[in-house]
Image 1 (spheres, one colour):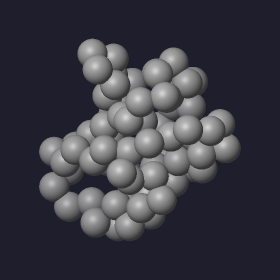
Image 2 (cartoon, rainbow, N blue to C red):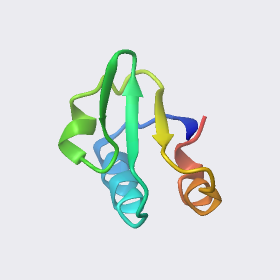
Image 3 (cartoon, rainbow, N blue to C red):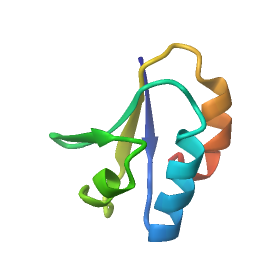
Image 4 (tube, rainbow, N blue to C red):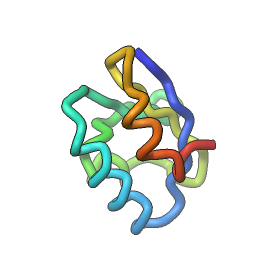
Length: 75
């Protein structure tokens, strides 16, 4: 598993992020404090507090291609 800190501030960023992560077959979650949602769910993401950084948890060891695609969201 790999954990990547990210920041999503605007609705358009969330839409772009979801479109990117849906291209990959691995399971992914977003964690904000004690709340965890499916990273591929746009409604789940909007239920999180987006004013704070969140952690993308990818359940695979080799996700370099994904990391490159989401570079704009990493902090």
